[in-house]
Amino acid sequence: MCDAALQARVAVERVWLAEPTAVEGPGPGCALLGEYPTAALAEAFERSTPVGAGLLRAGASLWRKYAGSSPRLFDLARRRGNRFFP
View (cartoon, rainbow, N blue to C red):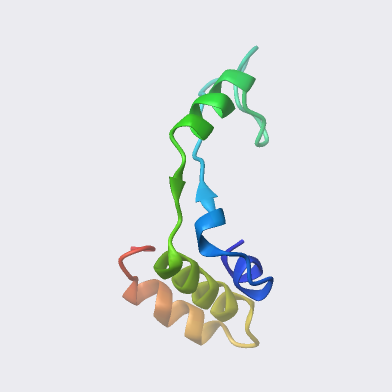
């Protein structure tokens, strides 16, 4: 998502993060395979926060290393971590 937003030159102020709270256990109303109840998604959007340019750049850099031809750069970045992706 970060790399795609940068490549598409999406204005950073238009990129927000909404994180629904995981619903545990099998049964009605539970999040399975990425499905969340409507109320959980509505709550997540109410709590959404702007992503920011730093997180977009860090995420794009990490993705490019992950998608690169060698796993070494990604492994080094993963071990080192950064403030956005510890």
